[in-house]
Every structure is written in C-alpha cells, then in structure tokens.
Image (cartoon, rainbow, N blue to C red; front, side):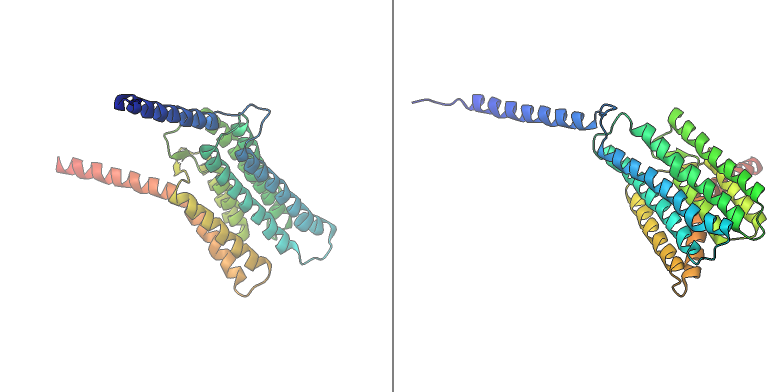
Amino acid sequence: MTVTDPETMQDTDEDRESTARRLRWARDRELRTPRSPQQLSTADMFTLGNAICGFLAIYCTTTGVLIPHLTGVATNGDRRSAATAVTLLLIGSMFDLFDGLVARKLRSSALGAELDNLADLISFGIAPAYFVVVWGMVSDGAHQQVAAGIAIMVLLAVVLRLARFSCTTMRPGVFQGMPCPMGALTVISIVLLNPPFVPAVIGIVAVAALMVSRVEYPKPHGALATATLCWIVVSMGCLAAWATGVPGGDMLLKIGATLQVTLALMAPLMVIRRKVGDVRARRAESRAG
C-alpha cells in the first residue's frame, strides 16, 4: 500500500500553479511584444481604415462639391457630398480611437506608430486642409488665395504636431497640443457654421495654433473614450439630418458644430482660468503680507 506524503502533494500543487503563472506571463508577453514589420496587427487594420476614410473624404469633396462648381453643372448633391465627406472623417476618428485601444489590449506591430502618423496626416491634415481650400473656392465672399494660405497653416500644424508627438515624451494621460482629430473636426465645424469670412479665418488659425501649442488635452480613456464615441455618433446623426433636409436639420448642424468648437476650446479656457486664479492668489498673498 502506497502512502502519499501531504508535503509532496502540496509541492506538486505549488509547482503546477507556478507553471501556470509562467505560461500566462509568457502568453501576455508574447501578445504585447510588437510583431515584425512584415506582419500587421488588428490595430493596424483600424489605422488603415482611418487612412481610407481620409482619402474617400477628399474624393467626395472633389466629385460632389468642387467639380460641379468648376463646371457650372447645377446639382443638389453638394450638401450630401459635404456631409458624406465629414462623416467619413468622423468614422476615421473612430478608427483612430479604436486602434489605440486595441493596440493597448492586444499585440501591436512594429509599424503601428508610423502607420498611425501617416493615416492621421491624410485624414486630419490633408483632408481638412483640402476642405478649407474648396470652401474658399465655392463660398460667396471668400478669398481663394487666403483660404489656401490658412489651409497650408492647418496642414503644417498637423505635420509639426505629429512630428513632435513622435519625439516628445509626455506624462501619462495627456496630449501636448490639441489632438489632430479634434483639430480637424473643429476646423470643419467652423466651415460648416458658415460665418463671415474674416471670423472664420481667425477661428481656423486659432485651431492651428492650438494644435502646436503646449496646452494639455486629456487622452480618451475609459469614460472619456465612451463619451467621445457617443459624441461622434451624435455628430453623424446631425450631419445626416442636415444632408437629407429633415426639418430642423440646419439647426441641428449648427448646434453640433458649435458644441464641437466649444469642446475644443475647453482646455485652453481651463488653462487661462487656472493662470488667472494663480495671479489672483499671488496678489492676495502679497496684500496679506
């Protein structure tokens, strides 16, 4: 009759648990190790989807807005084409949101950061700059040369911001400067509001300046990411109502665009408020002293 030593059984159980832990660690390490440049990850597919959306937005703006204007062909589809272009950029911003979340959960590729910058340049640099150029060509009271100049400013702001993002290490949870998706959608919101030309130019230049500024914007994690996704869906609904001529669609578009501009300005307004509070506190201390 064989007698099993309890201590031996305990050692065996501990060995099994230790082996299971090592296997889990090895699997997690494998998932988080970047793939080789020849392999694309799931996050990279979202990034490529972002780039495709940017290209299609440029295509819709050209075929549905610019070409009819240049050829003098009467069309009622310019509003639908503009709404489609902006919706594509909103979808691109969704892809940009998801590729970061997926990359943190699953294994990313060695190409991930480079692909993300290139896709952002297309969707949130070239596409909104082109949108501004077309607006300067088709809008009444706009000046084509000035519109081209501020479009270049938007493009350069995105290029500089992406380059700085690749070279600068920030504290966790924040971006330095307005994120490119927010900047692009804010520029387009200003155009869709169709204000007088000079205020529109001032607003777009201010957005370009905020993108290359040192103002800190929070990264969309957790509840903020969920709120961002919900806001994108609501914005798509406003665009659809405007494009299809639903009663009140114009008002919905103006409300949505105004809220987008307001959200973009919240961070610098908070910085100004904090600085004003610091100045007042120092003045109060000097008076008390």
